[in-house]
Length: 205
Image (cartoon, rainbow, N blue to C red; front, side, top):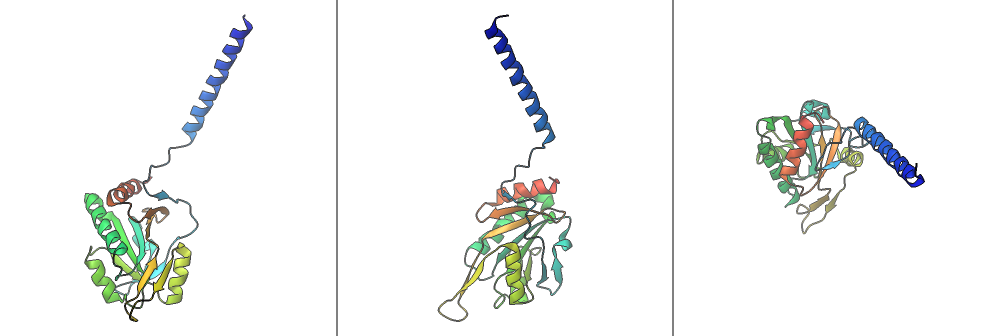
């Protein structure tokens, strides 16, 4: 046999072998879900919380098992980011249709001085009666929680003692129905993107 032809056949055989191996490898590695948020499955932070809701009930992540949970840190006097995010979550719930009740939105206050339980309850009700406002037991507990979630917040003084604002992380943490942290959703990602991700998590991906 012509040496050139022999080498060509060897090359073809080797390529075929590599293709077969690649196919087998792909078959052993299931496709990752195509989330539109940032996939942080397996992260070692934001694993849970011990907070109180606006009705005075202790709350933890385990209370919402069976639902997709979205946790957002903010404050009720926030001029833009917080109301925009909550309005988007209302849209997400509407986009989910019959599965809307399987979504739980949790708003964690970073402004305990002004966000009393009554204020939190009224604020949440202005968006959706099913959304819950939560607060930490003390400023130290809030600081520890923020550290656990790797979120930032800081008081920015205003013209009067009560007119201050709060700088804070503008993103949401998304948990699957088993209570596992799965996604980090940046501010402004949009309701449709979040709804798509919630649907995937409800399917058990």
